[in-house]
Image (cartoon, rainbow, N blue to C red):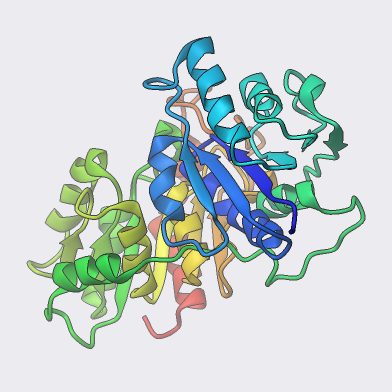
Length: 339
């Protein structure tokens, strides 16, 4: 019987999506069990490469040392031989040890987690994060193909039905363009989505706004800038996997450097990602064919943060304020000439 693997990924939603190439690689070798946070579990539903999906509720049921110990006992019963630490906290390393995994691979940059690793993997800062995660299960000199690094999500019948209901029959035949104006990081939110949407709808496109419940105010501003009925506000109306299905129905996505770009990568949707305080060189750009990025490349202060602070450290926020609608519209037109 093939040895089973354990993947521990308790980071952001986008990271969960970018872990799916690693899961697919391990799935070719044998059964794969995956540990994720509660919000990430929905993204891996219907994934044929996942044998057991284990939710680590570290702020609730599994909080504290007792919760960690009990979860480790549950994982030990699964019998995984090897663990792959996609998130380098000492808590994840301890969990792999408690799970009884004899081999535990993690990145060299994870200083607090390294004592738990039996194999330390180089962290290639010059590679996309999907490749970095995939490399946890590969020799150091492995060269992936584009197909091996393609993220994978698997919406099911319920997700397709939810999107069918949301879209209805209105706007049939009009190009559908998704925009994702939100981000948990304040400085990552490009402020000109309403003006961009107005241009798109004036050219005959239908715009759909994607995001969570907290993005409702941003969506309302986009709706107000466009003709009645030209914009569909889908923020907070769909579960994550159904949002991926919605993106699959679109001709393109315009988004900040945030989770929607990774959903689109998994669904093969051409994506224009707007980078402000961060840069694509960090390894989190879009992966779908035909995608591109936009950013204010002349600023010496970029990048200013690994994630994007809530406020500009220099107070001017030029990385986003000076990235014009014209510049983004030109990039989108080059990516999607039919608009």
